[in-house]
Length: 168
Image (cartoon, rainbow, N blue to C red; front, top):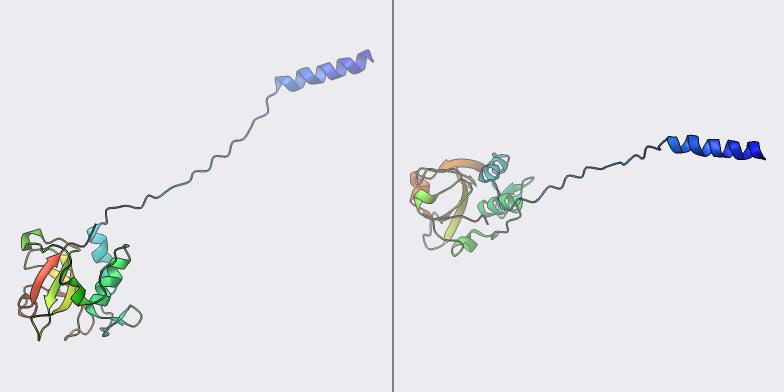
């Protein structure tokens, strides 16, 4: 019995001299905060993915085609921004910017080419330079697709109504 007790005591001493290594698995979880600031250049980069997409009246699907308001709506929806689906909805939206305030990602609003009392066309500034800016839009004209045009061309400068910043 003395030997059993000795073996038990010896076992206890030996075990207590060793420490069990406890493994702590730490998982690193990356939480990506949703940015409240939208990078203007990313809007234009995204919009340019659709260059050449055919014009389609009332279209808002890149697989089928876009009209001007469908294109603008589609691009900004990608960034969680809800805009009017019809160009006429832009008549009273936003504060009119002066040409010196134009920035990439701002929305250009134009009168119709036949009727200067209604809003008839929209585009997104892709190169800001006041009234010499370039903009990306779904054109029903000669291009018949999403294209980039010069604001200072006769066709668009005469129809210019306003430019608005729609970003939060």
